[in-house]
Image (cartoon, rainbow, N blue to C red):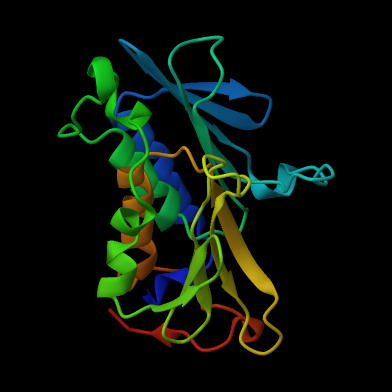
Length: 230
């Protein structure tokens, strides 16, 4: 068992559990080569998820980083995606699992004009970052955005920005780094139009103090992580 979870790293068993979670929640699963494509359609909305095993990831194109999970939402087939969330290969599977759970939450209510909850208009960023404040993360304000640092300064969440005030568009960023050289261990990005309650779910997941099971300890380069015997 490893804590904090943002230093726990990837895990094959947790990834398999996420795949099973999607199938149990009625996501349709199809193979695309060695990749898996999941989809969940309802009136007024279409969810899609692409899982690429890390060993099959191509070199990222300029301006785009490879990701092992990518979730998108759109009003229907052929429509422009309203938002997307991408997780890099070494992201702890508990984060995409938290997003998947929030997407298929049976208690999710309809948004404007009875759209699915995952197509709701975006709320204020501070509504999404409540879990970070509650967990004692350190807030660092910049001119148009703000960053939240974990108490050990090994993880960060940077708020997304839209272009409504002429400040440009920037994705939400979730990331963790190594202890000594601060090289990024993993990162995830979320489009600024991602509904607030989904970002809230990711903030809750990254701050969750509950240790997560792993078959291997993080390597020495990862730095300090607490190992708890079951």
